[in-house]
Structure formats: C-alpha cells, structure tokens
Image (cartoon, rainbow, N blue to C red):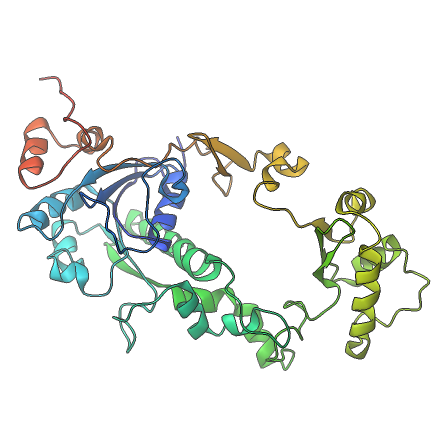
Length: 391
C-alpha cells in the first residue's frame, strides 16, 4: 500500500505540468487512468511518445476517446462518476464546450476533485491566450532575476513554470482538496496557474524586495550569482564546482580549503570587495580538476559540490546510496519522491501506449462487462480487446 492507494485519477491528455502533476500522484500510489486522443496530436507541443522515454507519463494506464465526437461527453461522464480526481490542462472554457466542465462533472460526482492546470489561470485578461513556461514566469517577476549580470534573462529550462510552479502546485492542490473531501467536505475545483505558482516559488525574493535587500539588476544579489560565494567556478579540466557558502562558518571553511585563509581577502559581505573575491576564487579553482576539488571538499561543510551532468548524477555515491535514480523500462530517471518510510512508493511502470491496459483499469474501477461494452459503443478505445471477466 502506498499513501494514495485507492485514489482514482482521471487524467485528460495534455503536455507539461498536467502530466507531471499526475505522475507525482501516480508515484504516490494513485491509480491514474489517462484519456488519450486516438491519434497523437501533431501540434500539441513536444510529442509524447508513449514509450519508456516518456518519463512524466509513467505509472498510468490508458484509454482512448475523441472528445469532439458526439458521444464523447456521455463516455467521459461515465468515467468521471468513478473517479476521485479529474485532471485537465486545456485552455479555460474548453472542457465546458465539450460538456465536461466542473458544473457537469460535479453534478455526476459531487465528491470529485476537479483539477485545472493552466498558465494564466481560469480568469483574467490573458486567461485564453496561448503561452509556455517562459511566458508565465516572465509575468511572475521571477524570470527577470535569472541570467548573467549585464545579460538577458535566461530560461531556467522549464522547471519554474511547468513543473515547480505548475505540476507540483497542482498535485498539492489535489491532495489538499482530497483531504477536505475525506473530512466530509464536498468536491471542488482546483485552479492551478503557472504564473501564480512561479510567483510563490519566488516568495523569499518578495521579502527581500520589501526589506530593501534586493537589487533589480541581475547578478547583483546573494542568490542570483552576484555573491562570489554563491556561484559556480570552472576547474582545470573544464568542469565546474558549485559554491554555496552563505553562513560565516561555512565561508571560513571554503576560504581555508581553497588555500586563501592568509590571502588578505575582503570581508565576505563587503560588496565593494566582491570582484576581488570572485577573481581569487576563480583563480584558485582553475588550479585543480573537478575530481581533485571533490576530494578536497569531501566531508566538508564548505558547501561545495561538483556540477554534474544528467548522465553523471545517477552515479554519484550519495545518489547511489539513496537510490535517487531508478531504471524504468530501460530508462534511467529520478525515483519517486518524497519518501514515505511507512508506506514506500512502488517502482513505477513505463508510460503506456495509447489505450494500453485500459480495459483492465475499467474493470478494476467497477465497470462490468456490459458497462465496458457500452463505453466502447460511445467511443472509448483500448490497445487490445477488453479482458474476459468471470460471469
């Protein structure tokens, strides 16, 4: 048993944060059934392969349904009646036009948690506009602080909007709403917007701004690479070491390990001395390889670590000791997190092909053989024939 065992999640095919949020729930034991389009869409962002390399698609089963077909609403509402959670990532109004909006869904299932994932939110002047991670975090204020001093703002991959401010916020909202339902409350709508989630991720910066401790110029603050003791440095072999020695005692150990304790360096928080500090640190790190520095800083509180590539991270001794990475379908990927010591998460299964294991899922959701046949008549499809059930 996992922490969300027994929770049924109906996910409508989307990209980015919605499938990531569903993956988090699946990793925690929720039974996620995804409603896929019968054929892969050609213009829906990065293509989802339905193969093991589709990491955020792991842990589900699938049925197919053309939501624009005349009978699709009846089929989808039948599925919704059996679900605890619905996840959709369409533009506002899309599900309503399909006859599957919150009003219709909650009328069929009053205890349903109806989770909606968008970039701008369900309301507001931009609600129906297209956008991607970069656009959403740009409006949140966060993007303005990411990038080199004197340079342009740089995309932090798609981690701040899609995943941190999107999928994780969605999953948190779902779990909170489920808790409310299980305490006797009614179902409700979760309106998760990436712009708002990204702004929340920047909460500490808003405090620094209010306190007059934040400068709007990139690369001039403690956490944006402005401080020389919170940055990364090139090593002799062209690799990098990350330095995060914020506290005074950690900074003192950093300076000592670099061999600069007697170099007459400026004070740690003397901004006028930061250029000199940066030059001293850069010169010191260039004197040795990354592996040599790892040996020097091993078991140290100087807060210095190697900058590892995606291919290297799974092999680091700490990650291996914690089993932080697993192999699913031949693909190395992050293990489910966080960890629950009493009810550990199970090994996830690879992303399903369209319709894969859908029939088995429906039977386990309580649909009898005649119900499954009726769903098939309404357009629900599988990647094979429904499994025979005992009389």
